[in-house]
Length: 285
Image (cartoon, rainbow, N blue to C red):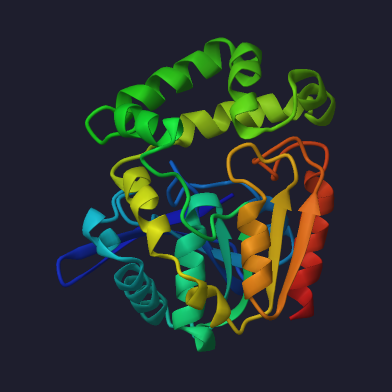
């Protein structure tokens, strides 16, 4: 995969972004702890003739944390990026904690969005200060320490890939360990190890937690683009309340719930079926 990483600066704000492939453009809003070097789900899109633009969202990679002052401001910067690239319309794919960005973008700029795909995406307020995960995130993923956290996880993944996968996978799944093992694949361990090596939180993840509170029912109700909502019924990270909420409020939406091992729908034994569904949807709009 030949990926070009560039930076776009305007009014003291920097947006880092990557470009890969040639063809009809897809704008991807990556998930939490990620950046413009995301890889999950890209191969199928590229093999089917799409090009992919991936900005590092607010506070991730080299993108200014100030981009995350609000979802609306962030989306304005992403529209400016499309203008710079001379792209009039895109398919939007919003992943996991990138869901609120994709939702606000589609609600604000319907003329720019040919279709919207929400993949295991947050669609309303997510973790709050009452949740253990929220409290833990503010400790291990705070900007001053997140680099050490990911460096340690990456090293352990390379030294003990199978062990770390077995330890961490249950965080992404509501299945018990035996069921999880039956639905996962040998290649999942490799992809999981690669994921841990490229993950960083920067200021971005704490911004994500804040921004999920900004999404309102009206954002979803004002989306006019054809929308595909893909979610694992065994997602242990983002509950089924999120896709159900999005489907209920987005008029032209289809909900596709899949029996995969968990949150990471791009790997595992059902990944091929999900890719086929996604490509079929993109070609139909």
